[in-house]
Image 1: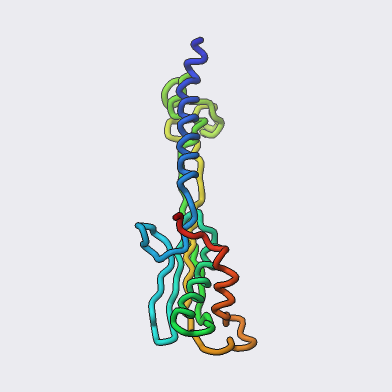
Image 2 (image 1 turned 60 degrees about the horizontal axis):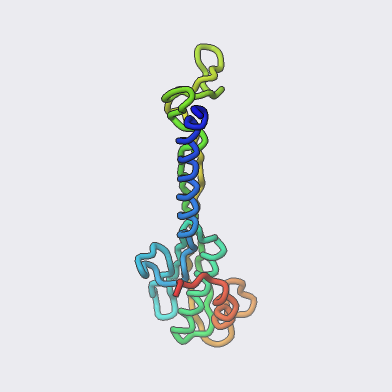
Length: 192
């Protein structure tokens, strides 16, 4: 019975970590296609008029919004802005997608600083080099950690708008109504 009580804190910690992870995963959704700052959201689209037919457009996603979603949302907003402004096509003059990467470390739930069998701050490991040989005992603070990479994408473009058919042979020119038709159903919309 005593052996079971030694494992109980570790099992409890593992269960709590799993529940917290599931709760966070349930809350994490991609940035919806909406204006930046809407409902306190960090990401979304924004635009700034530069000239009558020229805008700077951007879309920022969160850590669960894929690069493809961010770039599609940028193109869709550019197309909608073109139609709203009374134009038929737009061309991207400058277009870029930036990636913001950060690393988050969390303690490994399977290796605790307090190991109930070996006592506080000591546990078996072959990672600590002491006095010319590898020791089976870690020093406290040299615990294992899990490292997770978090990427966040932001796409921006400067666009020029025009009337009539789009310029032939320009790979940076888009028919605004066709873009809206093809991409509207593929972006993540806000929850109703």
